View 1 (tube, rainbow over the protein chains, first blue to last red):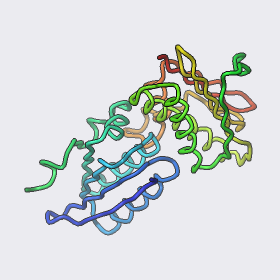
View 2 (view 1 turned 90 degrees about the vertical axis):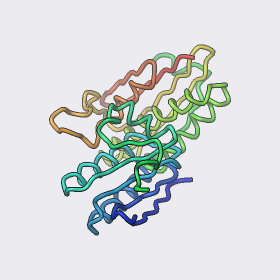
View 3 (view 1 turned 180 degrees about the horizontal axis):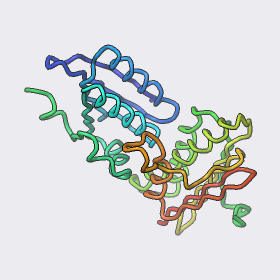
View 4 (view 1 turned 135 degrees about the vertical axis):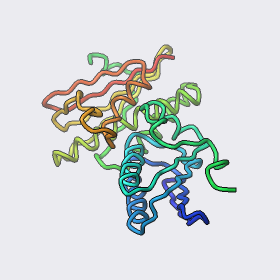
Length: 112
Length: 137
């Protein structure tokens, strides 16, 4: 499995981007492009659900960091949700876990 | 690295293309699984190798070189050693996430390798760069 990306506009106006597969130098550009397109549509409050991401390295992390910076600069924000180890691992090892709004599950991230 | 000639090396030669990075991960994952490395350690190895091979592919493409990226792995009773060699003319291993930018979007590869491997050595010369990652068992 390489990478699949789906997006959904939530009732509260935020955009849920569900990412599955591997995020690296080969697939990272796809994710960056999709996030840029969403931001260009004014969808700047974004939740990335990455529980089905089986692998991510620092190139994939760079895509998330770039998105976080762009979204914040445009008054939006980015939340990262992942119940699986790879995303949390790369955030922890680079010391960026606290930089992101990170959650292990969607509970509490979306309005009931 | 005088021990490159040891007979316990498995070698994978790859073209410098982004698509091969996952092939390198699969290779290391297979060698580690065959050697009985546990799941968490295996995932650490795959991540560290992904960083090293990504750097090698980027460096090779940056200088427009067509030389291959070579990944070697040796599974030994006391350690797993992985070497990633490119022929791109060397890079400056001191280039990592710089404090000049508040939240840099790149430069995390080498810190990740240091965070995962027990030993990281980077030899950069005119002929290219060799990254050696040692994971003790």
